[in-house]
Length: 574
Image 1 (tube, rainbow, N blue to C red):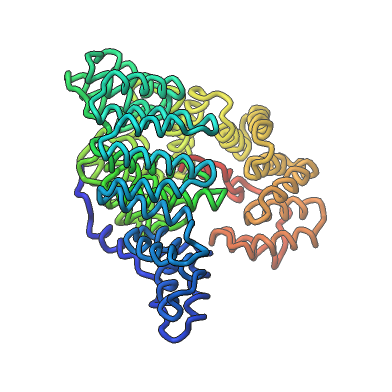
Image 2: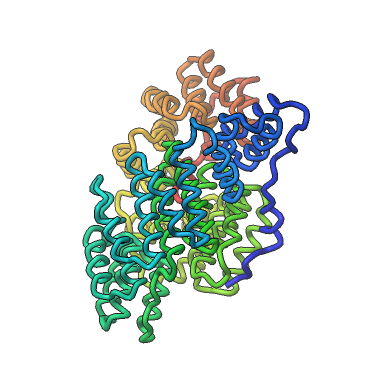
């Protein structure tokens, strides 16, 4: 296990706005805050809204916007202060989101009566009803009234998906109170509702281990591991059980129970990135969860994952660095932190961090694959082939889930001009996962590009297109394959379709230009080449495109060296 924080992580954890708030203009601060909010830059939005409030401290619209900005930024104490001011406004006296935050603050301070008062006013709509009820129940449990807490949960009616939350949290409340029998009933019910839910599996398996059913507990965890292999928390549980150890309760305080409720719902909502309002609510719930339990490793990973989805790698790194050093999930955090460092062009730091992980844990296949993916993305093909080879050496009996390692190593071998090895790996990937479209496409195209196995190559590519008819890269491969064998009319048909699917890809536009030129459609060819040039192709390709725009294409057929390799190779899993 590596240290909890590196100097790099500390350096990027400072979450200051891009520039300091203006002290001159209320409207300027407000507009800057709005712009930051649209860009989902919560740190800057928070700073600008607070600056605007200094100029108009009682403005309810500013107060409400500032409240949501500081909440999204994770400054819960400041959100409480602004929330108190909001409640002084008649218009916002019943704001359920403010009530929720104030209720969470009271829970943290063990003011359970106040917490219930606030939380009973925080319910409005399916999601709000569920979270407010669960938190109110944890306030009752904190006050020593477990029966009323469970009754509160059980009285809640709503959609079917409420069921797993209700049974899990009723079981956790009973378990914390020492009521083993009722806890077991609720955990088992939750498990029957969804045996693939990580926290349900942990709760039920842990209860079994503490109540004389070690073998049953082991079966629960092994079943999960079979469907989702190598999860650190599950592997850790299995290892403890095999040593004859009992597993601890998942929740040890009412605050931890409330944090778990906020994490569970927040993580589910955060995954709805396509629905901005739900994702933003998920972000708020995760921040509140971490306010109650700052070291909740799963909440930290979910928050960092949300920042990645928001294209904010600096924030993701700062959150990953907060995962405790002794957590089984710290290794996952370090791997993801490395990938984010690479996305910020800090590749040397990323490689160094992964190198430390691999040195410390030579069998860490996830870290090895992460390093291989970085090297492949950086076009270090000979080096990435060696790294993927280390991962393959750890797989004693390759099965279907391992197809991707052979596929990626095959790409690296092919790009580093080691075709015999590449072909063997691509065939192995297909053996493990027959009809995998990306492998079909890559192997089929490579054969055609080399003018070998032409019939088999076209068959593989057509099969890939049949499975992925809307994948512009695979459709491009079929069109370009027809081009390579001289069937230009058929090539144009598929390349035009590929351009429709991926209009901003320079390679596909370049391919279509070449095909147009071959059939005498020179004006259209130059248009496509011009478009390809303007889409910022790779430097080597740019030179070729510019030359074609000056002189057209030579009369001799295209050579294998001119052909761009299939794009889907680097658009899957890396």
